[in-house]
Image 1 (cartoon, rainbow, N blue to C red):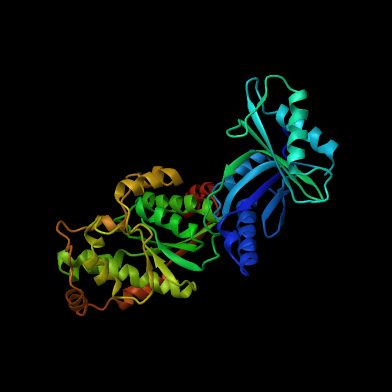
Image 2 (image 1 turned 60 degrees about the vertical axis):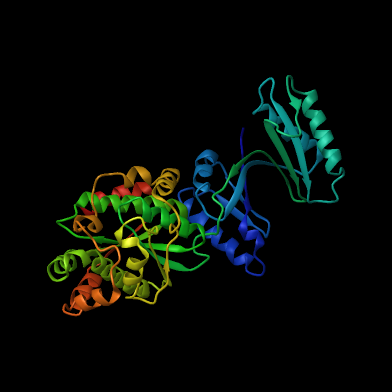
Length: 401
């Protein structure tokens, strides 16, 4: 069947009032970015939905990309025809003939936005259904659970017919709720946290701390690949790679062993906060889940957070590890996260980290060390790359290494 359009339906966007237009425009921008390689595609939007004209582009490829774009509740491949009874009957039969097998069931559901059309909704359902039954064999009607749900939307300028609906990603368009920085490691948690943050409309940039030679180039590429996975949901992902070796070495020398993890997280947060300020973001996102590891107890989070007044968003705070891993499989980050390349959060983990660190104690230990020059050096040495797809993330390996 030669589909020539895709009808996109809004979900939560539809509940917005005077701001609805800005949400729709943001969604359109995101769709354009994700479909940037499909040059012939054209877009039209109103307050109810968006229409994509394919102009010969591959509909299946485009559908696979649309499934990952936040702000889309559902979408359908569609055929466009003139808003005349004869043309609608002809197009409906063509659509069904390309889909049904003997024994299949169908249902016709008409939406008559053009009230001056010659037949009302019920009359159209009966007319089109009867026409299809007369011209096919082995096809029956099932109004409750049809194999082929034929939908007809009659508008004055044209009529659209669809027989297949696809579920969208839901949520809000990325970028409609502001910007935040994601502390992206190579594990399971932080990419899933980034996914959930983007689903609520946040534009996300990632910050990764890199400590060669303790962490390998493969570990760096792993994080670039994870950024590429997340780029599918927003069209792009900017990744800031922070050189962290000297800072970690100084922590190991100057801070008591059971407090090194707390100090490490505090310094990471301070550097991420500086990047946030430079990039005009308003929050920091982490993959923390309450009580999962020593640095994620309530006492640890209190001691670590004390270095900044910036809001810290924790989308996974109430999830357990099994739930997080299952979600990583669903969104496509699992196979990358499971690769056995360690990041700087694990290489210097003490055998007995403090699970209930005292803020006053870590501040006391840090008072004997001037970390500021190293923080400034790390901030000055940041490598920033923007990734638009998973394939581009892989290609970065050749460019960087």
